[in-house]
Length: 115
Image (cartoon, rainbow, N blue to C red):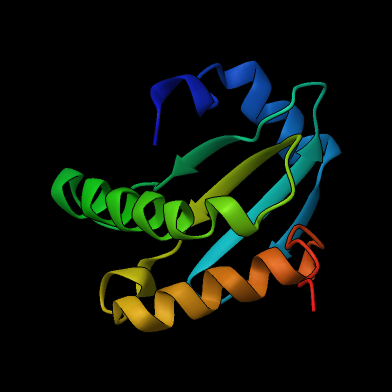
């Protein structure tokens, strides 16, 4: 994932968390808010409740990797904030993909399948 498509500023992340819509799963929380750009911007957060720095970075890398798989299937023009929860560390990657797909579907961000 390109660094240019990440939300970096804390003001932007706070704006999404306060004014956006949140969707909850056991392993992560997705916050989304429409932006004025043609592409999505993503921030991945793992707090100290997830674990030490190594575990937090591991969780963030897994989430970014899973998100990358859905990049072509997601509607564009949104700011997304994903907050990791502790169970994500022991979750199989396949189940992580399913959890992320579920959250994106609940948020209405998945593109309609063409038949």
